[in-house]
Length: 489
Image (cartoon, rainbow, N blue to C red; front, side, top):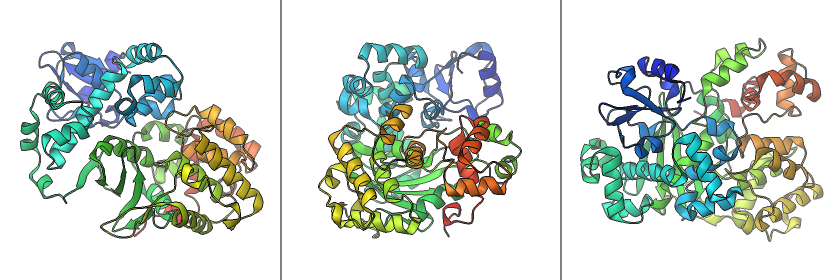
């Protein structure tokens, strides 16, 4: 979008927050870059240039605006919609792969050469993977400086910098302030935060309807791993350097997030996974406009606009839980999952109580005794086969997954039908166009709305909802009187 100058100028002049994260405005006369909704007086059009990423602005020598803080904008919704190389690379960079494995590790995961990845990212985003990762490190450093009392040296290494000098130079270059000056400018209430807990606000594009989002997560919560407490969804997180516990609570203009991490180096990854869990980088206006064009869906969209797709923080975990939930009630699926957690999960300490384990990784379930599972023999075979394939690395589920290829690989497993493959594609892989025409709730809602209720006919009708059929499923599910559609008290 950054190449459409007139459209960008109109967005800046109207301070349209919908475009935050889509592009960034660099001001030639001041040397700063802003988000489109910056509250400052808009510059003259001839003084504006537009870039597709914060990293591109920094590469061009611009520093972040202190008023609108463009580094905290929601991520571009493009990476949620697309499944090409650039989108998969951006999802992996957000997950911290470049910081942990370098550009060569990024290339190995994507199956391309480092040169090809560099070329495509530069062409589309104006910055290569190292510059994009550097911009992300700067944002993480800012969060740690402003919300914790960690010594600056600890902040530097936790944010992923190789040295304190590089950390200092980057912060000064990006924010035009030293780390000490950033901390001095932080809100005074930040100092009163609980020791060891990082408190932050996760931005999103309005509107956001939290009922089905948090209702789904709370209604399907696995005891010991997840819970709803004091108006917040809490769960344990398995992270690259350790583990964490997060509490997420809906607010009118943001998601309140409290993170307790065993290793602060996991902050960037934890934030990225929480954003994916709550689908916070979506563009709800674009989604709702498309779905509202169907007269059958229009009343549902108008009643509660901004529904999101509840996703996951761990793709392998969700795949296991999807198999456990085949043809059983929500309560039964939770019971099966809780038994696996108790028997194979890694214990963790929760100062607030309630959370006891990490959900077991595939490697921890590889030695699972099928006879210990209280479920039909065919589903035992399905589960053990899935776990074995995940543990061996023959099947990979992650932010870099190619949606059509992964769906085909899932359908090739014994006991995997279209419903299981599509619900994993929708909630674990993040495919916004995944559709569940065989789902009982979807078919029941379709019949009540006068839509075709047979899978083939409904799929044909749903072609008009593409590429947002996963969101259409949320609106259809919301017609049912089920706990997943209600924000817990």
